[in-house]
Length: 274
Image (tube, rainbow, N blue to C red):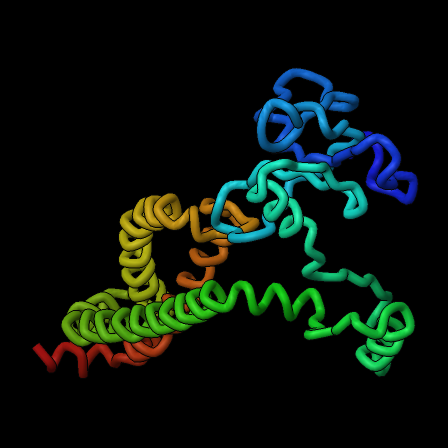
């Protein structure tokens, strides 16, 4: 984002440098220009070991549910001469090369064989333990979250299905109870279209009352689950609007059969049921 990255010019003999993230700047250099400033690790004797030459964007390297950590990145060739054993061990561990990231346009054929051959040509002692694509790595790290998401989707579908079945049952019951009323209305001049609209109006009134209760509850639940959402907001108008549309469609189809039954009622037969 600012300055430069670590390059070949950063050798053991050159000025020791570091690249920091924005969280590091916000904590230690608030309202200041960090480029050219110095910092260090350990005691005061190492306070100015590294010069900041660049600032990069924040990223989450561990748990996506945790806040962004303050990070700094230093060249693997540049090491400080710490006196304390613990500081030496910490630096060695921090500079251990865990992963090599390769960027390709697509996935070349026989990639693993090519990589093993290339590494063996550089150093026969270098071992390639695992090879994963970026998508595979993300999928492995978010296994639990993916399972929870799928279960939530399943329960949501079941909830919509049960709501549709319940709405159908209530609407059919109301039509059966109002058979004589439907007959009287039709005898007084109402047509089949009027009866269909009456049944649909009742069904959508129930849906409207449910939404008046459900939308505030959904917004409240979204705030409680905000820490489990990665890269999206707990309040999404498109998702909320989509849910309302889906419920409206389900209400319509759940009411079609009772509405058609009401429209097919013969006035004389309806009056005889009283």
